[in-house]
Amino acid sequence: MESPVEAAQYQPIIESEATDASCRLENVLSDTNLSCFKRLQIASWLELKLLVRLAAPAVFVYLINNLMSLSTRVFCGHLGNLELAAASLGNSGIQLLAYGLMLGMGSAMLGVYMQRATFVLLATGVPVMMVYIFCKPMLILLGESTAVASAAALFVYGLIPQIFAYAVNFPIQKFLQAQSIVLPSAYISAATLVLHLLLSWLVVYKFGAGLIGASLVLSLSWYIIVGAQFAYILMSDKCKHTWTGFSVQAFSGICEFLKLSGSSAVMLCLETWYFQILVLIAGLLDNPELALDSLSVW
Image (cartoon, rainbow, N blue to C red; front, side):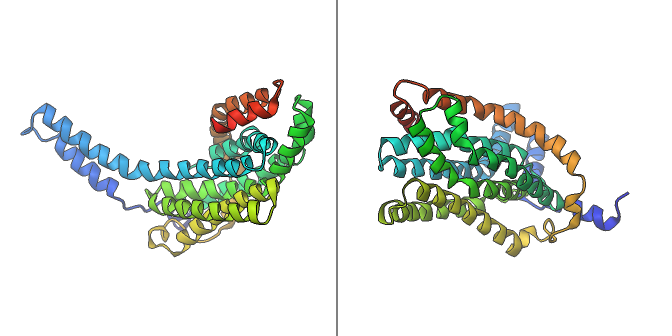
């Protein structure tokens, strides 16, 4: 049985504008002095304002995340057709595996649960890393050309650190979203995108690091996002009740968490695997570089 202190640690204390909006919404819907149509109109407007305020920054964050990967492919595309094909295969054929898995398992939980999710995702990253390391023979076994598979493997090697950035980022991201704290992540992602573009230009063109440099910069950008978001959690008063420091309780209840997060990860992976399969099939065509380049632009 949980002690009062433990119960308080698990119980989120969140004060947001959503509560006030719910009260106003309830008052409008129960106001018999207004016509049914007027109540519906006002209630819809109140609900829309609340949804836009919460959802727009979250959508912006995911858009920025995709733009970072897209910009990396653009930089690689200026190096040549083979490099663009390799970045496309690495991004869409390999990276999506880790992205879908980590995003699905990073449940929206607070306090100790966020730490537990981070620990489980970091452990999950180890077998995923093995897929990255041995991606070249796997791609060749699937029928990809040796040239494209070799270049894609070089690109993917630079994405290995990104796996563990994913493992920390998604629980933190869901931790903030569960408290309706969405604007800081949007600002951090936007600033990181600008920095990512600058670093990519320097590393790829000025330092001549090529594919491995482009993918390492992408990994670094994710660590910048993680570090900035965690710094916000430590310094913000909004998180002082939901983040009370690291706890050994994060290492308990692992099996129960795996059952919950595993189902979520499978559902999300099924949504992303179809595109991975499409990319892998494109690499089997007569001109794999052209086919993968086309998918990269799409």
